[in-house]
Image (tube, rainbow, N blue to C red):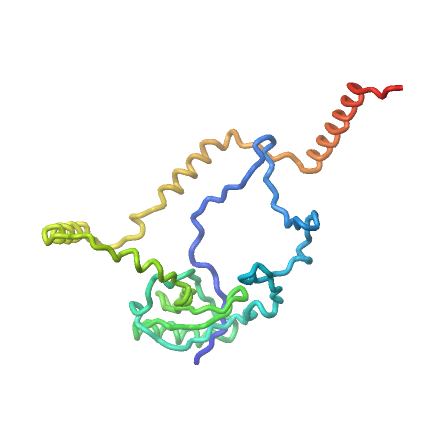
Length: 244
């Protein structure tokens, strides 16, 4: 087993344009609080624990040290494979791999070896307190990229039944389908498929930017609401004077 001390950096930037939930009346962001419905109170993070639900509805508290291994910034390589052997359905997230101090030589040697052999490495690692499988592959110029993997048992096997139908297909239909596929075959160039939906959303946001407003200050809002409550109480007292 080969171990290399490394740091991981996300290789892919999330293309999602982050949209927040705002209060339509004043434009303030909606807050989400940890609230206990039994104690009728907001709960501090220090009072929150994690628990697993049992089939009968009860919960078992899982202590943080038992929740998973602590990350040690080490990837442990266990075997080497041809890339096509690994089903793409197992791929989860991509990371750039940076060697820590003292691991530069092992890093460079592994990168060159993977390039020369055209193989990828299967590794184990602990990431965010979760034990995970990973594929490590070499990219020019001598850079390692890591792809975290789902475990095989994560695949929901029920989907395999979706293709078990008895639809009748003629030889002519098969030939036409194959001909269409061959006509549309071309080299894959990622730049030819930009995220048009994201571009259109950004254009809409840019066009609406002149109408953008700052959310009101929370303290000022609280003072205004407090004053409104006082005025409302005063009005109610005036409308319903005490009887002597």
